Each structure stands twice: as C-alpha cells, then as structure tokens.
Image 1 (tube, rainbow, N blue to C red):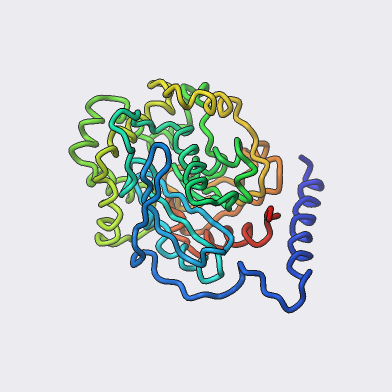
Image 2: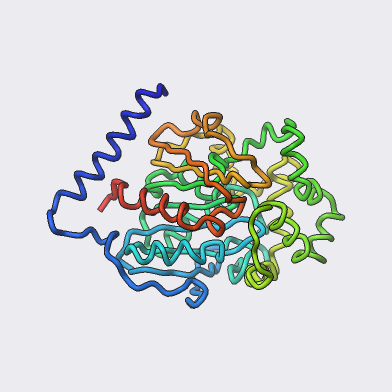
Length: 343
C-alpha cells in the first residue's frame, strides 16, 4: 500500500468517527460517559462456561458500554491490566479481562480435553468467551499470548473484532518457517522456549514456575521496577493445574515440535497462510522490550491491509499494558470510539 493511500484511509477513518460523534449535537456517546470505576484488583472474579472451559474473568464499566476485551500473556495474568481496566471503565466502556486457559481460575471442564496451548486454541477461546457473554463484537487488545489470540480472531473472524490493539505487531505464528533462525540478539532472549522443548524443561517449569517467571519478568522488562507483592499477586495464577501442560504444548507446537490437536486443524490451516488483518489496528512496541526489540512497524506493514497505526512507547518493556497503562488504554479507547459498530 502506498503512503498516500495509507494516509487517505487514516483520514477517512478519522473523519467518519468525527461525523458520527457530531451526528447528535449535545448527546454524549455512551462510550464517553464518565462512570466511577473500582480498582481491578478489588473486583470479584466471575466465571462463565463455554463448551470446553470455565473461564474466570474480571469485568468493569457499564454492562451496556462498548466491549473491550483485554488479554494477558505468559508468564503474566489479568493484573497486567490493573490500571488499564479502570481507565477504560471510567470512559464508559465495558471491560472484560479473562484468565487465559491454564491461568488463574480458568479450567478445562473435562479431564479428557487436550491441554492444548496452540494459537488456534487460545484464539478460539476468545470467540467462545464472547459467545458465552453475548458479545457480538469487541475491541480486542493484548500482548504476548493475549496479543496472538487477538490477532487470530481479527484475522479469521473479523466480524467479531471491531478493532485490534497488539503489542509487538502481527503475532500469528508462521509455523512452517519456525526452523528459520532469528538474529542471535533475539534468540538469546528466547532461551526458555528452547528449554521447554525438553523433558528437563517441563520438569523445571513444574518444580520452579515462580522462580522461572520471576527471571522472565526481569529479563523481559529490564527497566520495570516491579515490587515483589506485584509479582506474587500475578504468580498465584500459575498454580492452575493445567498451567504446565498448556505452556509446554504452546512452546513445542509453535516450533513445529509438537502436533496440534485435530479439533483445531481447520483454524490452523487458515493461520498457516499467514492471513492479513483487515480490521482497524494500533500496534505498539515498547522501546525497553527485552524479548522483542522495538521496530518502526514497516516490516509487518503487509500483514495489515486496513487502517493501521504503529507507535513506539518509551520506557516500556514486554508487559506493556502494566508498564505503560495510559498508552495502552488510549489505543483501546481510540478504536472503541471510532469503530463502525454494527448495532
């Protein structure tokens, strides 16, 4: 796409949003209505069932607000959004923050269900969560595993995603090319992924999940000075009985060293084509990310065929929403306000 065409699309997208906001003078759109917001950490964990999962989640903001679903990564949990969620709720958005499969109070309902961690599984979980909560469409936002789940839904079910916020850009895995080496500066930060390919790595994760996660928090975000209380609050989510099996399958599958499960074959076939994302998107890179170095976004530009803006966030590492909550919340709110909601 030429720069001129890209700029024109951005202008049209922004202009359409402005017209919609001005269509009813004196009327404040519901998404802008200020409402009191309780801190995320004080809200009760709700549970909702899908065919496979009993999903734990926090919800903030008015039930009739435009939905924004915030998705966490590994090894983190819903408290990545402890500041983002109330910022969005105060603007009148309905904010849903679920535990991903294998984390917190989210449980697989049957012992016979495969403990899949592949990208198709976490993406399908988001769709099933939306179905269970009667949410036809939402802004999807995330980083790491959560960003990948959001990208999967945006690519294969764009009608369900009104806008996408993704830290580190396009996160759908090209498993066919998983054997291609990355620059050594990136490879050394992925040591844990290679560790998990071994049974020694599985045993290490089983025995020392907190210690391993603590090291990753420090390495992933070298400028983030989190407290031990903050870490322990999130680390409780790793006590999930399926945590180890799901994490190990995730990292083995993405490198092509573990097969996917048959119920996800259709989705994985679609993802194997590295499908473009057509929905309005804001991608974010933390300039202090210790895992994925920040870029100017041009290398992934071809993966986004609709409106897309890329932003670099100073002093933010891999857990971008917790380290730079305002930048993350602003991106979510921008898409939620400007999106063409199908009502």
